[in-house]
Length: 511
Image 1 (cartoon, rainbow, N blue to C red):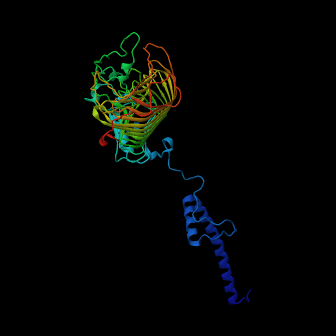
Image 2 (image 1 turned 180 degrees about the horizontal axis):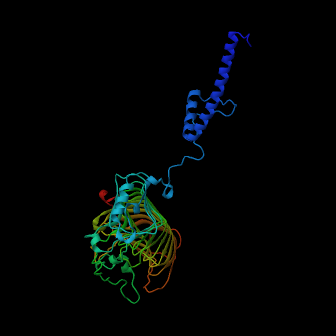
Image 3 (image 1 turned 180 degrees about the vertical axis):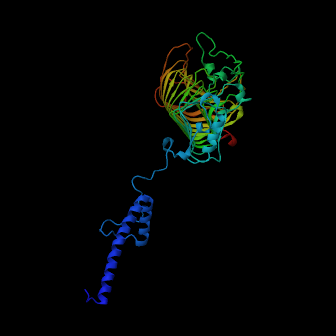
């Protein structure tokens, strides 16, 4: 060893230094690795991102395993959650429950302001849902859920019950509608809930001269008693006399793509459901329920509206189950159960010398049960305009007083002035009208100056049932058209062909 040169000693020293350094680095790395694990997953994810950035996506582990991901996924213990969903798979941020805006729902507290607040919030959000939850009864006064600055496709989810106030003070001097939706696009009212107008206090307040259905004049009881006794006005200390103007329970005005489905509307003060100046209407699977003697409680009323489908619904009321008024076109009424009520009517039209235009109306697959009328068209003397392109098809009449009616001398007063002008009726078609009647099977009373044209009948099978009324044979006046098949009873009064003379409407009277 003494012979070792200085160079040998130096070399051995350098080797010893490298061995010591190597051991020290491994210990440090081991400690550092333990330290990272104590810091959790955040540093680990950050580390993977750094390596991906500096080394690129083509580098591999030394072991020859799978490529490193450019961005590491979070560990299984922290999955990425989708946006939270609320009612009917709607994002929770789009749901507005009236109980979150102060609605109590005990049937006594006035929840009108809470409904207004919930609507104001839902109005600002597209595809929002305003919820009226089940198991609550909400007392709500007259209210308008209105646009036109609301977002589109709002859903009014009705699963609870909404009731109307019955005190006169809540209605002031009289309001035309109770719940109103105006100037909206894609509005939907749906659910399993109930709108209850609690209309009995209004019905009892009906004035003695309130309009009656003019077809009552055709129905004469055998014992000659009056069909309807004048109502007794209600003057209780609780409610006071109600205003003479009775509101519609649910009205849509000036709206596009309106849907009403699933709900029940009952005991309306007057009309139950009304569409005015709407385009694109769908009514499906609803229930309308009011007593047969509740005055002027139409089921569904359409006016100045087009492209409407009313289907698969049950309607019981004190007036027309479906009423189609002026300005309506492309209306399809399908699979309706009607009764009690006054049937399905077009009109009345042309009142006070007004112009009325109705076209492309189909009523199909309907059951009438114990109704006053079946399918009816009614117009006033002195009107103008036209009704054309009407199809009544596959209608089952069960103990209906007047199954088929055209009345161009309609008058809901004790007396009306005789006038020459009339709404023109043409292309009116009846097919598959079957069942039983209790007064008169067919009553077609058309204008002297403007006879009905192109009235066709096919497969009319109506049998009499004697009840408590005088019964009559079919009646026609100034009605022209064609019988395509034999009828029961024979409708011999229908005149074949065209009228020999017919007044021509002036251009301003035509539609």
